[in-house]
Figure 1: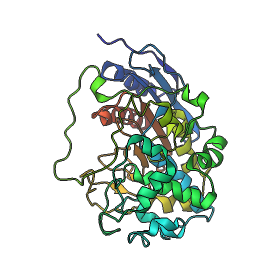
Figure 2: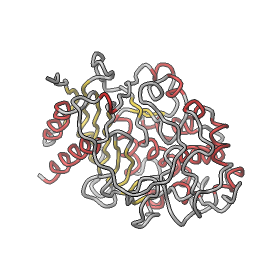
Figure 3: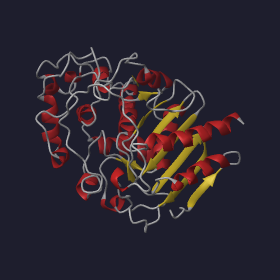
Length: 375
């Protein structure tokens, strides 16, 4: 019988069902997790529980950091919106105007918008790379810049799972002279006191949770069926959750699309700042959220997705509650984060137990929260 986790933290009156829904996850596959939700400027839910390791011997703390996979793309997209707001970056200009080398192999006309909305056709590594190659910024960006696009840019889109981050990171490096990790700290997370980082220091690494693969989920849960049909072949390296993603080298590196580490509170603070005007103007937010794909199927994921400039807009595969204008990004295995400007909500849920059924967990939490808002 599964040992029930102790859930800690605070919750404002009226949101008790959210705590119950969060605690219920340990009756299923949860090992360790955090959940933080802002309603306006008020932190109405701030919960954590379980353990940071597979053996369930180290308790999860409020400041536990966890690899959030593609939640990272959403936070990096906030950083890019800051640059647009400051006049240092223009979504409509070619990437090559900022990063000259990217223009090789007929990519000179690919705009920042097309790159950020996964329309560039540089969706994987060619030639293939090993996980340790991702730690070498020069090698990874050269791989991306030297490719020819897999389709005519702007005519289709397919998920640039890892390569997206090197394009975004190089845009930041070329416009600010800083790495993505350094810019993120100086421009966003330090001023917000938001615990989210790309490239961890030694003390930060000591606060990290182990990542636990689906093969270690307990009890076993049936794999969620994935959409049928053909998808494009990929040369992205395999990233085993423990051997690679829980390693010191991975945590130390800057892999902007997939190795951001944060707490649920740190991530929720970033999204709350975005919709409250603390990071950039409302006009810049609207620019960032303009829908760039209109009902097409992602060639890599074989799903119909609504994408803006780095964010996924609310749609069935990436559920963010009742508002169509909600935006954010989920991460591999079950973590998710989003903002809902219509209801003034910022939401972040992070977990170290990866599983194909991850969306079931966060949907339960999202529905519980919005049900409370109705009552």
